[in-house]
Image 1 (cartoon, helix red, strand yellow):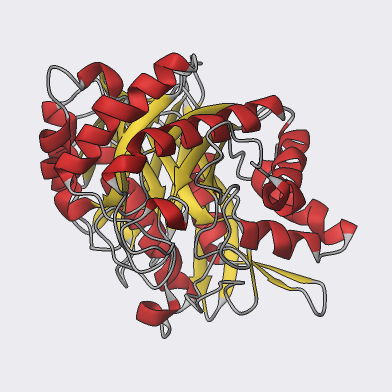
Image 2 (cartoon, one colour; image 1 turned 180 degrees about the horizontal axis):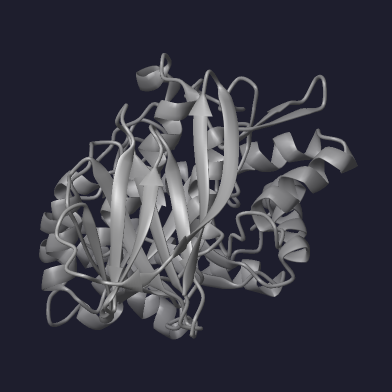
Length: 447
C-alpha cells in the first residue's frame, strides 16, 4: 500500500513541484511524530470548489488572446487544472464591475417589461459558458445581490449602505426571482442564492444594510413566499454572507422553527480573521445546514507588502481551518483580474490567483492558484471529511475520503524547519517529511 505525494515549495520566488511515494508498513507501536487518520470517522460532505465570475473578471478575460483565454480556462476548469465546479456572480453591479448598474430602474414596472440583462450578457455569461465548455459539465451557480436598485433604498443610491425600504420588500423579492428565472432561461444552472452580500458593511461601493431581524423578516415574509410563487424553492437560500466573527449569532438570530425549512445554508467570508470556532459552532448547532465560504481575497489595501508565499499560505490556512470546522464548499472571489487588481469602479483593487496584463497579453498564475489546487484537484464533490489527529500545531492538516474510497490528505508547513511525519492508518505506518514552507497532498487509492 503506497501513498502518492505531490509537494510544492517556493524558495527565492521560484516554485518547484515534486512527486514521491510513501510505503505503508505494519505499525510496531509508533508514538512520536504521528498523524493518525481515521477513515471510519466521517463528518460533513464537501460540495466542491469555485470562484466568482464578476463583470471585472469577464471584461479582463475578453481582452486576452484566444491562446491566453484557453490557458486561463484550462488552469481552472480543465482536467489537469483546478477542476472548479462552483461559480458565484452578482445580481446587478458589485464593486468589481465596470460601473454601477441595475437590470431595471423603473419603480412602476412591476411586470419587469424593462428588465435588461445586457450587462451580464456582455461579459459574465460568455465567460461562464466558456468555463462550462472547458469543464464538460454545468457549473453550480450562486447569485448574490450587492444592492437593490436605488429607488428601493432608504438613501436613494446603490452605494453607501442604506437599507431596503419596507414598501419595496415584495418588489425586491420578485426582482430576485425574476433575475433567477432570466438566468435559467439562458441555460444557467442556478442552484444557490444569498440574500445580501455583507449585510452590515457600509461601503463606498454597492452595499445594503440588513439587521438580523430585517434579513429574517425579508426571507420569511417576502423572499421565500416569492420563491414559492415562482416555483423556485429548489434554489438553496444561504443567509449572512459576511465575515466569520458574527456568523454564529446571525445563524441563531435567523434560523428558528419557522425559517428552518427556508434556510439551506450559511455563507461566510474571511476578512475579519480565522474564527474557525465560529464556523464550528454553527456546524454543531445546525448540523444539517451547508457552510459555504463565498468570498476571500488578498486586499491590496491591507496586504500590499505580502509576497506570493504569504498570500498562498493565507488561502491554505483558511481552507484547512474552515474544512476542519465544517465547511461544505469553497468559492474564491474574482476568478481573474487585470494587472492593477481590477477593474473596480471605486478603486478597491485586490489580488487574484490569475492576473492578466491585458496590454501585453501576459497571464500570471500566482502561487495561490497552485495552493488551492492542492485541495480542489483531489478532493472531489461528494467527498467526506474524515477523522485526523496530529502531533504538533506546527502542522496544518485535513483529510477526506472521496466517493470512490480514495483518501486525500493535505498538509502545510509554515515553519522554517522540516516536519517529519509518521502516518498511522488502519494498523499501518508510512513515513513522510514535509519540507520547510511547503504544502503537500497525499493520495491513497481505494483498495
